[in-house]
Image 1 (cartoon, helix red, strand yellow):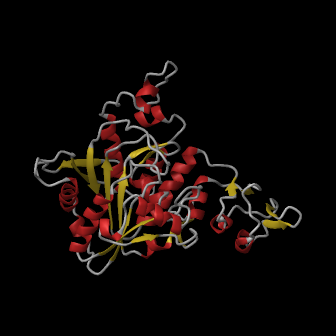
Image 2 (cartoon, rainbow, N blue to C red; image 1 turned 30 degrees about the horizontal axis):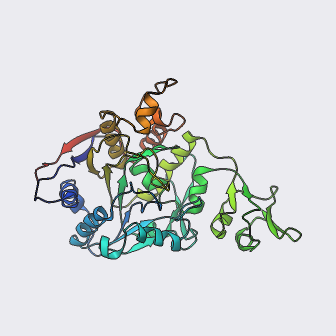
Image 3 (cartoon, helix red, strand yellow; image 1 turned 90 degrees about the horizontal axis):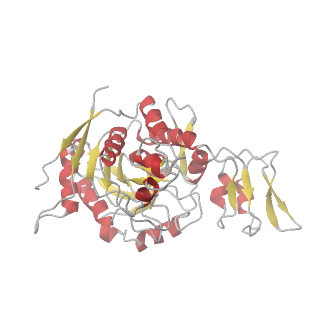
Length: 380
């Protein structure tokens, strides 16, 4: 496979000149977004609206910059993300939309609608075959993502406790999975119910097709029948009270490979374009309800039609940067018990894994780790 082209521009702007959103538009035009036929097409722009309390997520100004270019090309853009598996402010579409609005995302600020891809409770999904999948045969992807004619990922590059880093592949694979899909990536175990949170509403029982749940009339709580629970995760989306979890969390390597296979399901066989902003590089995911000080200085903006090459270019750019004093990464490197783990992301999160995701993505033919970096004139 020949080298992929990855386009880059820094974050410098001229006094009284165009700002970063305009510069982002210059970048993506140079990277070939105009080569995609969007005329009259539905275009999903997958981004992250940020958990409430977190302020490291990408500002809605960048979403608008991308949406405006899509509209210039005749497309019908919408911003999208899927609901989360864990408790928080984005586990159903109503809370998710309120979270997005509070964080500044609206049709007024972004120039396009917001659709939560897997619906009200995270159960509106499509089972998408994974060509060549070793761990996932059918990925459960939010329906709106798969209904779109064109897919664009707009990614914030940062650290991650389990996946090591969050870039294009993570934003696509984990981000586009429905609640059940996220469960499939994170866990292969059976359901477990927290009796303190269970309200006895029996909504989960309606979704169980395998006899894996039963209602205890004495306690007025749901219980799991381990002999019949198959770990499908359908009950997860039905519970409004965060009472259902799953045992047997997957090892980080397997999690990373499943993320790659989910990403394969999303991008396979249709026009795609990928954008990553390496700025406000927080040590943990934007799913956290907080963000610590950036661990590296701001680097720039990258774009490519190849999500794997894009991620690799961002990793390489970060490897050349000096950790910021006082950050979590800086403190980890200066801890008296520090052991070198070979790269800055594993130095911060030693038990995490990102290389397996890249290896699996390349094996599946999503892209290549070999790339040519093309720098765009930064004076415009």
